[in-house]
Length: 171
Image 1 (tube, one colour):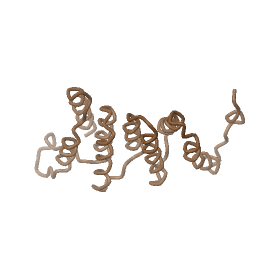
Image 2: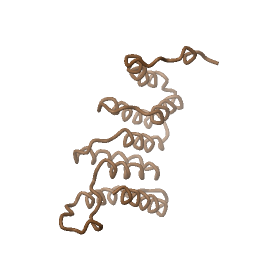
Image 3: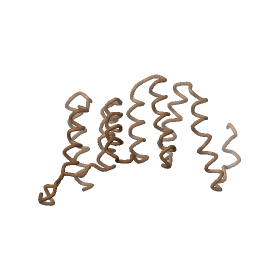
Image 4: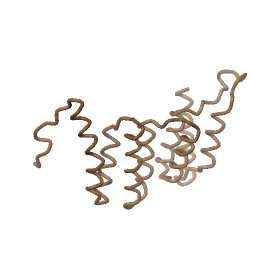
């Protein structure tokens, strides 16, 4: 199943390249619909990949690669509507997609997605955290970045993580 998912991702990337970097959102949704189709009775090697978190994350990732943030958000919405819970990686790829747009609106969209990671009880990873904080710095939204970072630091301290003394000093 993982090999089929990788095949789907590579196919979507190749098609995006052929279309000048654009992912056709309708086509991506149709592929996901086919993947959800009941494959009962089909030989195991002919069964489509079930639409699971990996499949949806693959589609969101293809949208990020193609710099198609609106399409990535549509796939994320479809994922939720289908009752599939996004993973941290799904949000990370959606954040990467929205940050392909420029300006404070893209930064705000990225921050909102970042907040959903916590709201859904998922853990942040370093890559996603750094990506969003970097966007906040670029967009001159330092206060917004601090607002996002504060609960992460507080959670780390509550769990017994020790922050090195030199971590808060400028060098």
